[in-house]
Amino acid sequence: ATFAPWGVAIHRCGHRMAPSQQRLASRRARLSRACVVAACAWCDVAAGSRPRECGLPNAVPMAQRKNITVEGVSTQLRIQPMGWGSGRIMANMAGILAQEVLGIDTYMTPDAGGSLQGLVSVAGCTGIAEKRVCSPTLSQAHVTIEVWDSTVTVDLGILQAELGAFMPEDVGGTGYLGAESYYVPIGASLGALNAEGLALGYYMSYNRSWHDPTPYFKKYTDISEAGLLNCSSTRFYNDAVDNYVKTTGDVDGVETSVGKIVAKCHGGPSGYWWFSPACRANPDTCIPTITSGDGWLLDAIMQRAAAFNMPIALTVGSWDKWSQTPRDLDMIFYWWVPDTTFVDLGPVQLRFPENDKALWDAGNLLTEAAKVRLGKYVHYALAEASSRARELIKAMEVSNSHIDAMLSTLKLDPGRHEGDIACEWLQANQQVWSKWIISETRCAEGWGLTDSAERFVAERSQASSCQWCPPGRYSKAIFDDTGETRICVECNVGEHQPSPTQVACLKCEAGTASAQVGASACDLCLPGSVSAHIGASECTSCAPGSHQAMAGSTACVACNGG
Image 1 (cartoon, rainbow, N blue to C red):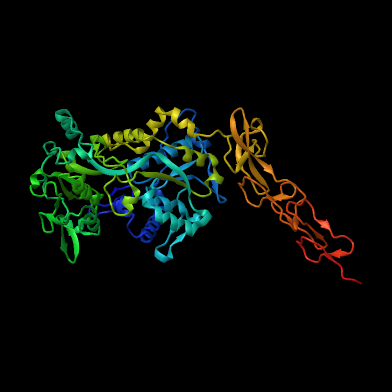
Image 2: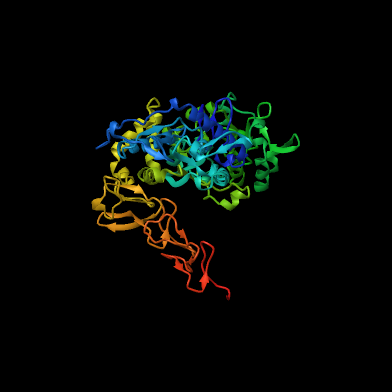
């Protein structure tokens, strides 16, 4: 199976949805299915492995690495790699740094089949349909990196409703963005540029009223029908065609079949090729254009070809057909990044007007597809278990050019392990990743400085590490010559804090009091005493002639006459 970043495995015998199309699917059904896969991944832990030993400078020896404690359980830091090149590289990068620099015993779980599975493995989902159970105590991983956020927007809402405060924490993006578009071979692009200064990476260069780009591409008839999909099995035959007609008014490019409007295709039982208006009268002048899956971003290129007078012959191929044909013939092809499929070809993106979200929401796809943040999510309790691990994942950001270079290396030598490529990058870019590592005495919010005996201290000079602030204390920011850190400060009298990792104490409610520092709870005023205001350090006895029979009261009651 081959993996696409937005969904589950793309098996060569079937088809899966691209990012823009997946948003239209049944999210609850997908969530249930992914939860099942996540549960299977937990059963098959033997398929996972430790990160590569990279030999970074001053690496913590294996024998000295320690577990983290999550919800009272001592465990390795478990990182869930995504099932594609860039996802595996980033996961291995995190794993190497966690074990060699932070000294945390780390384990790479089996690959996630897609963004949703990676997310639910951290959330801890198991079961199917209405019997699904999501609980952080079932989590198979503590970290997942490169979730295509736009494809799980609704799922995030469902998980939030089910998990509440136990929802995986969003700790930001990877630094590079995900995108899907159509691309032009570099050879064709350079040929047109050198011959007549025609920029084939710009959509207006394809307007037949002004230019003729066809000499730089093969003809659609040069592509064998083997491996092409019948239009009836793709998005040529679904509701996307309705939006095409509404946006372009091109009724000649569609027809009615089985009671609905579908694309008018040519060749094969139900057709393989759709021709745009600019070349429909003479298909030999159409530029062959291929996508895959069920027609990834097919509706967008249809609309643009009609609206911008582009001579396009559009088809959908099997995975093998799509991934190989652009290597053999000059043609336009769909691709998403980051990905290894065509990275070695160095193709040129065919650019359209900047994304207009309002138009896309209305079904008008004439502008670029929106770029997608690739998110990083961690177990809700990771900050408490290891603030340094959580801060490492949060700080990890790699540029598009760097991730593309690593993917190019992987493509040119597919037998290499992503962990080796991650290791090479880390060895060559210490000036980048060293900024991701917080010192052992730079305490995150909710934590405070401790000495070697794990006693809380008030100055960095006395400290050796950080620990989370327990109930009765709060995490206070302090500044010194090294920068910002935090200390755990006991709550004052008249205050309390019942929860760990908090940044402030709470005033005692009226009717309660706290006479000691570091209280995790305030005491109710006993019968015969009261506290009238919040923040009381002690309860006041009722004056002669008054009484109070109830505990936790705010005022005394005058005695009845006699």
